[in-house]
Length: 332
Image (cartoon, rainbow, N blue to C red; front, side, top):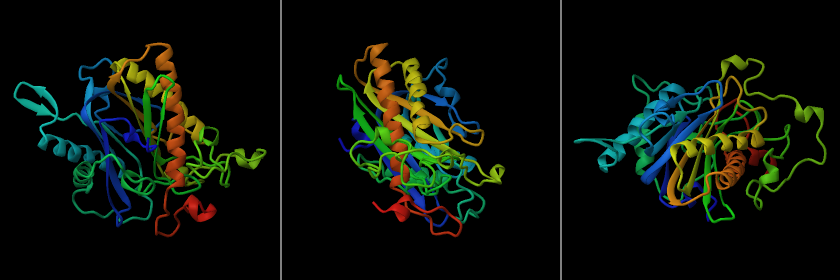
């Protein structure tokens, strides 16, 4: 186990980004189509193929996911990932036609100091293709891909990942892009809200403070007091090797959102676009009640850990007025 989303066999992740615009794309590819669903809790989401993932709708399996910066401009990243998969002959067959199924979601990083004057067309389609082309089982965390331009209320955000195994031997893993309106840290200190779920010292091993003060518990929002000028989002992908139906994958996504509440304060705000995608590769059977409940519990834990790792591994952007990286303030 590498503590990555790709600890689930048959999953690959790739990044592509542009330092000048301080934004990028992360692609999640499945070697074989995976059953998938989505749950949205933020008040300002931006998604691609979201209706397709509704449990009432026909297509059950996806070929990949496109996660991008760029707000609504970034939704074009899915077309790039789709183009890569089409060249591989992947997709949903409708007689002679083959359509790669690539849902996606975006984070808002348009006000992070990068040069967004990209001309007539935004670069996200090309970045999506490059991210898919780069997909492998080992991938970087922190300020890369769709997490390059991510920030939080107190520290630089980024991409995190974590994995675990249920007592019955089912693997569940998460990848998170942390661009929250709130904070992953307690107050302005080194402690992560997700500390009770940390494994080893994967995000610094600082635990929680000995006591909580009122200042630690006050609301910190990115862009405050002009909060209406910014938008934010945390995206998470949860993948398991369990054999789930689309409805069960939806329930997994719902339970996994608990990890957001354990790791971000406050969360699911009107300015957040918080989304969880849940996918299952179908290798191992799971009890539909007790087993799915345990799977959701572990999924929430790995989501919380992935969010904390996204902040812990991030590097600050080289632009004035941007938040510091956690490591710049507190070391390793």
